[in-house]
Length: 206
Ligand SMILES: O=C(O)CCC(=O)C(=O)O
Ligand SMILES: [Fe+2]
Image (spheres, rainbow, N blue to C red):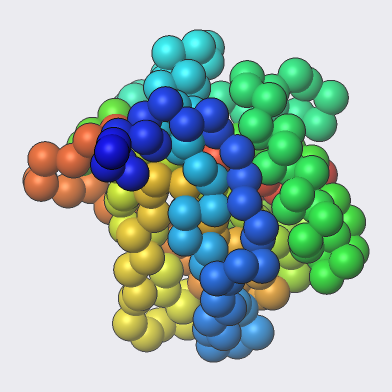
């Protein structure tokens, strides 16, 4: 009899029922997060497929008087673009079935981030370029590969919370979360394996 973890290595990526085991955590100021652990089965297979087939971009950004490497690899898919794996389309369809009513529109764009190790990170920010600057919205993130903590903290001050995300976990940040809270993936000295974050956003939210 094979161990479940060995079976998982050959399992085709597929999404489960979003509602099963989903927990909503209300945060202050009208923000909330939904957590659905292990939503995506076969997540290790998807990690390998994305890591090896996506045309990852290494961005460089002006920071004060220096140009620095963005500490992660990225790829962004607009609404009309073909996604790099069919299960990402399945994720978007099922997320829209589950959240479309409450969100009042569909998730459209797909952003990918590859954190190669503990030195890759994203600094504190809210996804508030565009309509999310002034309106409530949702950002859904599926994480594959090794877990990294997503930290969240209220912009007005207060303590942060850490949500480890990896291996097919789904988080949905909703309500005022992008406006009234910030989030980040901190760097770590600990040896950690790579993680890919798959973000679904409505059109005009970045
Ligand atoms: O790695 C993550 O899940 C977070 C990524 C993120 O916050 C972003 O791309 O806006
Ligand atoms: Fe973000």
